[in-house]
Image (cartoon, rainbow, N blue to C red):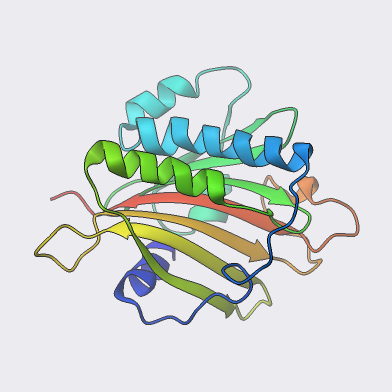
Length: 212
């Protein structure tokens, strides 16, 4: 699922994501800033600095606060794709960290929110810093806005690096928002949906191409 979505984004066949690019800026509360900062820091630690070294990710997740997910639990998020995952809680949120194994390689961090996040600026700053360190000139990829047959509304924005002289992206980074419109999601994050809210899963993703 994820690799097909990223492929569509990377080749540019999708329309623009309404709302995110054109939205008027508003004041972000300290609590919102703390939540965005924490998720970005966690993504940076696991999916930028450690990934794709699965041993390094496993060592970082050895603390007792990290609960390894069952095979069925991982399938909730990766479906039939192979991988592993952990669930952990902070004072701010419950997170699901998944690592997808080859042939596709992806590291994703998820959490539930009531209505999404007001800014992705810290995420963009983190991936731009990663790109600068790797000497990768990251470019925006087409935005996505679509509704799945089950009613979940999907929004995605991101950047990728396409090596000169090639057409296939090597590093792909995305923020994916899944709006459940009040329906209870499956998996470990279901209990984190604030009462009376739409329920929007926020997902930060880093994907690499299959190993040669």
